[in-house]
Image 1 (cartoon, rainbow, N blue to C red):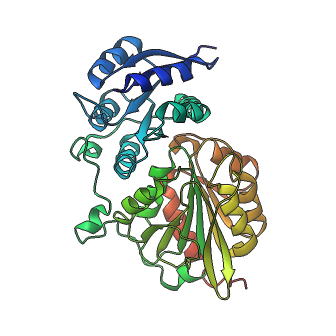
Image 2: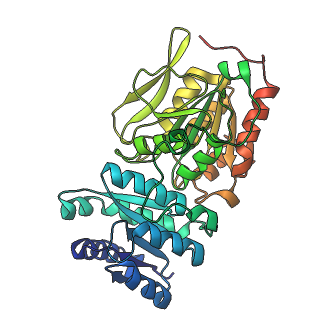
Image 3: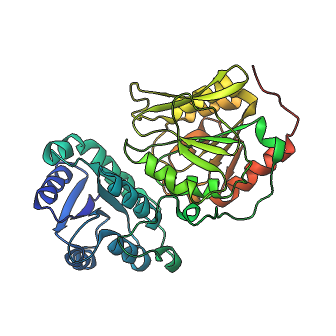
Length: 372
């Protein structure tokens, strides 16, 4: 079996050397080139045809986002972004994922050498995942924002307009139910697709997306500017309300509990579950235990099996569950495992998931009651 070939693109000689060392220490991958800027990288890609690229954002001669946009339009291939743990870095990373990057690595602002070495397993896991990802060509319209300038957090909302496709209101249908979403690699864009197609009065949506601390607040802000429902990073004790979506903070677990007649969000630290924090398993387990037949579960694209067992527990407790199909997944890992566990009632392409949720809600109005 041939090794995964990687080209590293970073303006820091230190980072290029560290990433090259980390990659070459793996028996199944090899760094075949390292470029200090995108223009050099362009020639390397043309001549070496790597399986995966790691790409820094802020570089000389051409901004990383501009390079990524051109690459995904003209020669789409798996890209893992190397992002700095700053507010600016988080916003740029969200834009990179919109442009087609498979995943990202968050490098520390200080102690870069030690920090990257500690992240070696995470980095190489993401390179392996990227090498197997389904990468799609970026349509020209998706590259419209100016190079290097991420869309403002709040996007459409900043202009006073909450943009979304027209969808029918659900009214009281939303008060009985909660939608639970689990996602990992490729999930930021998949979750956006689902949320943008929900009406303003949809049931509450509670989301665990595998993402490190420092990035989920920016991600929630971007979604809040694009969707009819309000989107926010979950805080411990938040009342879970219709027309709102709550995203697990990076580095913390999210679950749902009862408080009298209300559902509330529980945000807690703790050990990783299935190697993840936040973990889909933790969220879906609470859905099965607390919400039962009033839950609708959605498993989106992602590597691994996090949440599969708990999603089966949700189904056993009476929830209605959907798994994303292989053709529309960036990585068909978590949905495949959920299907294998018998957790999914339906397996659907991404664009059909939100309409299916709405139809399910309409078909079951009055059929379930809040569990106390």
